[in-house]
Image (cartoon, rainbow, N blue to C red; front, top):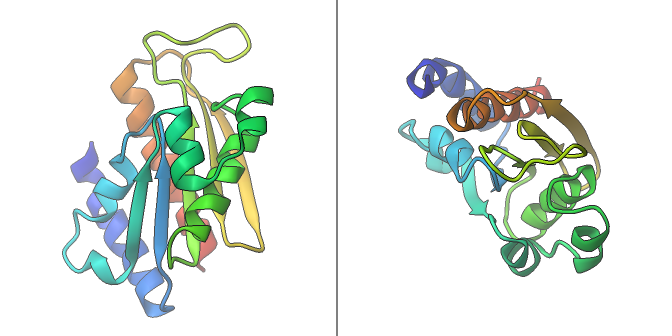
Length: 161
């Protein structure tokens, strides 16, 4: 599945390269898969600045500056956290555009309010962050993670015409 994404990623990187833009990723449930697919293409270092894998709440706070209030009030799997992850990634990198992914890949950890397969995404610049929530359903851990990579790429694609 990841191999299937490479032609799409090559086009995405070329679009960013042609505009002189850099990307930073802030990932939780995908564990670095977005950064991994972006950097699987030779020459990606002129587009990909860095990636943060912030799996724990503590790392979200320490590395991205996500506030304890957001985590206590809304949780790590929330719109608010995804938006804060983008803002923090931009603040802690030299990239112009960030994408974040936080969710519940399962098989455990879900609840009625936040079921397995719920993933929150944010993407944008310091001045304009867009949000997307997705419920993939309990389709299996790897399928959720791969589907989340696809949405993250889609959001990055939408940032650059």
